[in-house]
Amino acid sequence: MGLFNKDVKNENKVSDISATTEESRVNKRLYLVDYENVSDAGLVGVDQLSGNDIVVIFYGSKVKSVAYESLIAITSSTANIEHVKAEKTAKNYLDFQLTTYLGYKLGQNSYDEIYVISKDSGFDAVVDFWTEKEYSIKRQESIVIKEKVVEEISEEQPKARPRRTYTRRAGNSGRTTTRTVRQKVVTKPQTKKSRTTTRPTVTDKQKAELRAALKGAELSAPDYKKVYDAFASCENASAYNNKLQKSLSNDKTSVVYKATSKIFENAKK
Image (cartoon, rainbow, N blue to C red; front, side, top):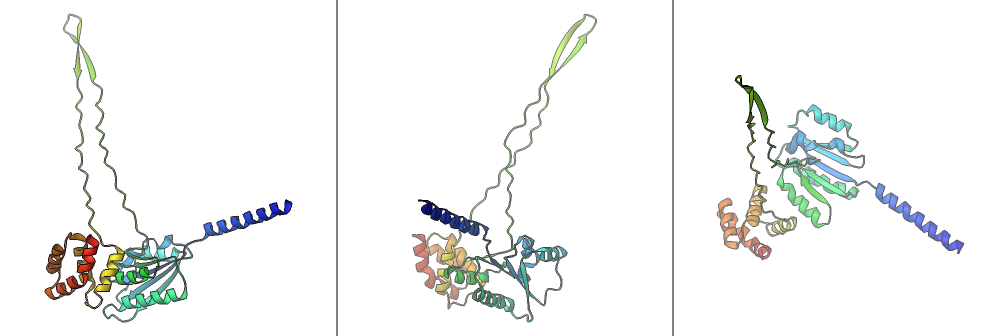
């Protein structure tokens, strides 16, 4: 009986150690910053990262200076920070280096989360590729995204002030008269609440399907954005085709509609 109790005690001890280890585990994150695209705004939050995080800042010869606040944030950060300079200025030269370096990093280590810091939607193709291979990766415009706080407008009306009573003596009769004066209440005009409309969006899965279907169409990043917009906002095939014609050339519209019409119809079912 004593031996059995000893085994149970040891098992509980191992479980406690495993739970403690799991709780103390810190995620390892990789940040690839397209500094030419996002500038200092993309580095917001770098000083909030941990020692397990890796930040790779890609910059070109056009970058001549860094804001002093960004310099303080970088030097005070506990994250591992690397700098990669793109020596040449050819079109998309830095973008291809960043994309290649991402594959190099993933070949060396494993990361719990990966972030491409850029406003360039062309990196969505990279995000789609690694997402299909079950990597946790996303593109955003800064290291830490600040949440917008919306202040609620109070609809309570101001309370009416109590009436004041004045007493005065009337002539020599000794009588007094009482007059009540109503206080003027000033109410602030109510501000109409702004209505927020949610624009229809395209899911990451649908983006991946569209890119796969349009692989040989030689579309630019702005073209893909127009396709996404038409795909999300239109309710039927006719409207989808019309919107493509308004935003793309006739040749591109023909290729895009032919390659994606089936995907559109399946999505709208």
